Image 1: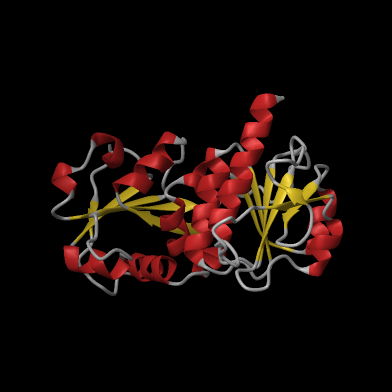
Image 2: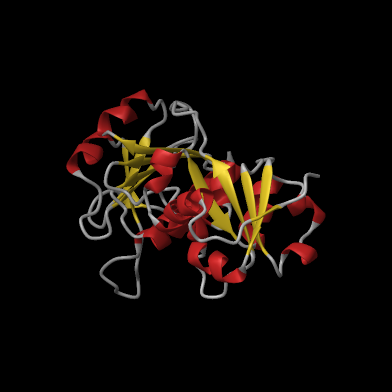
Length: 258
């Protein structure tokens, strides 16, 4: 284990770069790296076999850090707590963060069980859908243009580590979906069979649309199946993340029955 490098200046070039990646929702695209913090996300990354480019510790946290954290990164730095707060998006900074390289495989997996995000804009919704995708066996997520940045700090926190087990494509055009070889299923409040009665294809691609506008017409035209979620309580609509959890769970149950 190489000894950590102490950094105390706010003007240090590495810290300047880290502040951009940690605070700007899309800076990771230019940097080719993203920022995570806290025990849960850092541990989840290591469990998936990821190797951080940089590990960042506060001066107070370093003596208490797990050996796996201290040995994880190519480079480790220790900084004052005040400087870590400038990186952190948490109300109570955890004292440890990793900088990881973005995945570099941009290719569609044509036969994979997939979730399509069509301009889903709320970071919490996107992260929640990624968690549901991972939980229910959907290993590919395709985010069409207009969807919240998948590797932004807010989406990463909401995803709670789900990112590290998924194949993620973002900024996709509708035409990208032409490469999919699994049927697309869309939820609709006025069209299709009740989800509990629908013979769901295995595998398939569930399309989840914009919080206000729903799925766009071009994606509707590509869909082979339409599902309706019953709402006996009388609400007008469901939150997209809640709808996604219901749909993906229904698919997982259908798979168990195959």
